[in-house]
Image 1 (tube, rainbow, N blue to C red):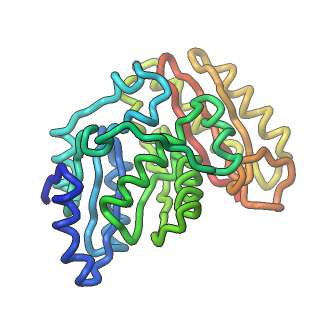
Image 2 (image 1 turned 45 degrees about the vertical axis):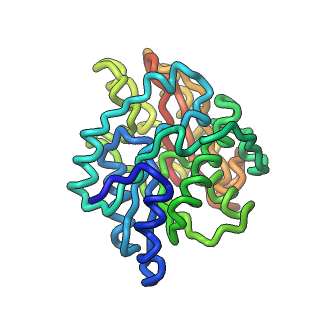
Length: 279
């Protein structure tokens, strides 16, 4: 496995692979890797000849500077995990490498940009699509793999790919959970023991909605999920919604479209998100 720090060096390494018509996969990450990220590498390996994993904590997607400051950066641990997973190349650029000069970025990501996470973290998805486009330009992958946990993010990246007419496939991979149901996240390290226990209500509420989806009506399911979360100490709910997977607009009718339940809440001092596909 090779670690590369510049776009020029990365292009030089990948050029012969492209000429040999080898399929290149990109797994973009912000580091602080866990089994969820490793699962993306494994799925990428099944679908491509070469797997590039990027590690870059992107400043333009943080709406709170404190959040950027405290984002975990255990680089040695990350490199070991990627080595063990059999990743081919790690692209680990500096901020200067990715943003050599100030730049303006604003593209039309559709109305879904302003819903859910977009409402709580204004401008977040502009920053996400800005860096992902830079990574796509650097790697020129045939496929890119993202975790379903960031459901809205995957939709925004698909919209960005459509906006630029990029020729690559975006693949959303299943959420990897701890044995007790908690969705794996780099943020979980910030949870105290009590927070960790309280956080389980998010996956429990989602599971309840999924298990009872065919029998219950949407309003009743939402009411029960809200009650479960609101009655849990130390958990402050931002939203719990059942939405159309394409527009993220709340949906009242079952069986009309593909639906997803999405939740976000602050557990102690840590904000967590999770989701489950319903039909």
